[in-house]
Length: 156
Image (cartoon, rainbow, N blue to C red):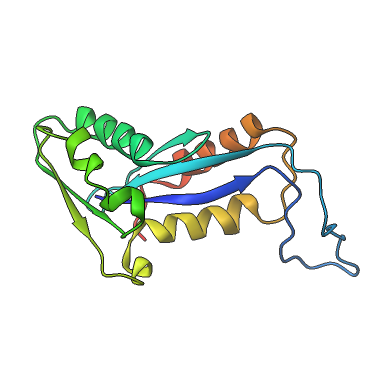
């Protein structure tokens, strides 16, 4: 399993690329209508994506989504690939996951690009966030969830 967090996602007007005589202007200073964190697990074997939305992110939220992942995969020992973010390498995380048959496999420092879940995040940025203007946090979260349900599992 490949795991990471998508940095804070703001609910605002996102620009992008499009063919137009005059591209619509996106204001530099915008009123942000909300923010949220997205934690995501990408199964490199089945190409399925599991995601959870949170108000903030720490080792507690990481342990929460990994526990939910383990509940979905009760009969397997899970190897979870993640980067060296401080909430991942804290001693508290293994304590919270104690006895769950989850092995944490850390990528080298400055090598987060090797994590397969980053391609999922790039797809979300390109196909959901670009050229969007969601009115609420719930609407944007629903758009992201619907995109992943339609597009995944897929071979990337």
